[in-house]
Length: 280
Ligand SMILES: [Cu+2]
Image 1 (cartoon, rainbow, N blue to C red):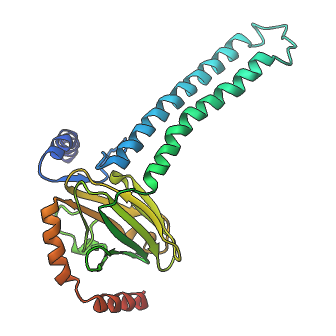
Image 2 (tube, rainbow, N blue to C red):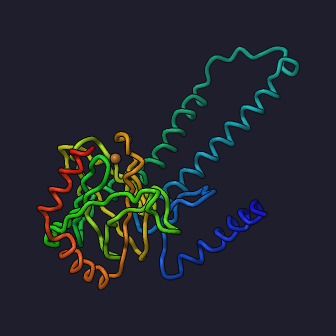
Image 3 (tube, rainbow, N blue to C red):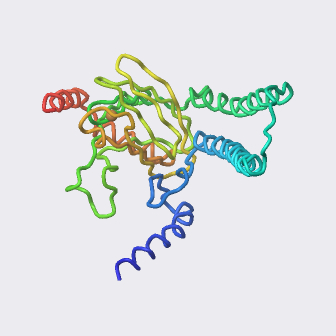
């Protein structure tokens, strides 16, 4: 009974996911039947969820209020119940109220909103800087604090995926970062505008040619976090995913040593990039 089994699998997922987070490897990725935002991996996303929840309450109350008012007006002032309509044209108190109250509501929404925009903008105390360069159609990551380690990150095509890997989301070289550290991200692009978007980290920033745009993030737990380019950037826009692997400090240092040898020949990298661009 495949349908029954599928339903069971979905149910299991709802049970397994919260439990899974507590286990060894947390995963920040989209899930089937997802109705909410992805669970937070760090402070940016936590604050985004808090702002979202606040605004959701406000707009729900407004919608209910306006809806009830509309239904009441339709019922109360229907021609059969209100045969001699009033000729009222002005009501100063009412007009001031329906101007001032919405302004106050907007101010209540604007204050936490602006606070969050500035919080996401840059970190005052970065532990590590990473440069992200968008290319048609892959990402390039540079670690200026660590011998300028530089590598490209390409999507793994469908026919090379291992069992259990996510289609259109896996890459050959992940961006590796230490857990609990503030990561400053400097972004640019070499061709068109891309956007570095990682929902579970709460990061979404344009990569614009000729400009360097800053943002930051922090992963507060170890795990693998998936994202995608979300600015339409050409034919293979859907083929340039982002994978961030957040690992404990010691593991990160070990990775740095390994990466220094693995990606040591910067010249070779550059030549490969140039060759890839000619092929496209
Ligand atoms: Cu792109």
